[in-house]
Image (cartoon, rainbow, N blue to C red):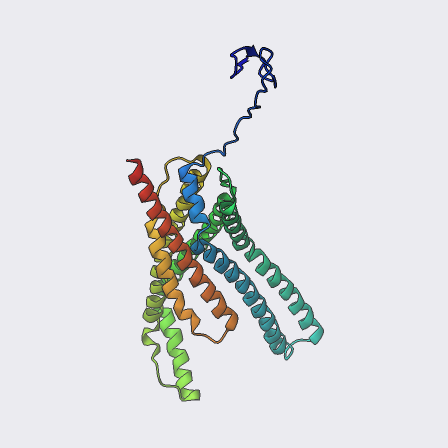
Amino acid sequence: MKKCPNCGVDMPDDAVFCSGCGAQIAATEPVATSPTINPVIAMIKQNGKSPAFLVAVIAYGCSVLFSFFSAVVAIISGSAIASYFLSSFFDQSDVSDLISGSYAGYMVSAVIGCVIPVLIFVGMLRFYLQCRQNGPYLNGSSLKLIRVPYLINYILSIIGLAFGVLVSFILFFIAVATSGELNDIFSELWYYARLYYDIDFFSGSNIAAILAGIIFIIFIALVAALVLEIIYGKKVLRSVKVVEDAAATGAYPQPVSMFVIVLNYILAGLQVFSLFQLNLLAVLTSAASITALIAVSIAMQKYNKDVQMFLSRMQ
C-alpha cells in the first residue's frame, strides 16, 4: 500500500489516481543501478588491457608464427640437400620415397610443436579481450588456458634436460673409464693423419682428458639449465595462478614473481646475440621473442606496483 501525497489516503501500489481526492499519482519505477566492480578485478582488468600486455600478446604471436615458418623452411632446405647427396648413392625413386616420408614426418612434428605455443597465445589474447570488456566480472578460464599448456611444456622441458644430464654423465663416465683405450685410438689416428695428410697440429696422447673435460662442462651446463628451468617454470606457473585466483574471487591479490621478471630481462638480453645472423626468419623470431619477454616483464612490474598500492590503501 502507498499513501496519496495530496490527501494521505491509502491506495494500492499500482494505483494511478487517488481514490480520495482524484489526484494523479506519478508512477515510480526503481532506478537501475550498475553493479559495483570489485577493486581487485578492476585492477587486474586495467593491467590486462594495458599497452604493454597488448605488445606482449602481439609479439608472442609473431614469434610463434615466425618460428613455425622458420621450421618449415629448414625442413624444405634440409630435404633438398639430403635428396641431392643421397641421389649420388641410391636410386632416384628410392631417394624420393625416403625424402617424401621424412618430409611429411618433419612437417607433422613442426605442426605438433606449435600446438602448445598457439594455445598459450590464444589464452593471452582471450585474457586481453576479456579485460577490455565492460562488466564487474572477469573469467579466469583464459589464464587457465595459459597455465595448463605451459605446465605441459614445463614438464617436457624438465624431462628433456634431465635426459641430457643423464646422457652427458654416462658419456663422461665412459670417457674417464676408457681413457687409455681412447688415447691409443686417437694416437693411431693422428699418426696416420701426419703420415698421409701431413697433419701435425694435435697430439692424441691427451685426447681422452680433453674429451672428458668438454663433456663435463656440458654436463655442468645442463645441470644448471635444469635447475634454472625447474625454478623459473614453477614461479611462472605460480604467478599465473595468483592472477587467476584473484580474477576469479576478487580476493586480496598477491604480487607475481620478481625472479621471473629479472630472468625475462636476462633472457631477452642473451637473445640479442641471435639477431646477428643471415637467416631472416630466425632474426624475426628472435626479435619478436625479445619484444614479448620485455613487454610481459613491464606488464608484470606494473601489476606488482598496483598490488602494492592496493594493499597499502587497505591497511
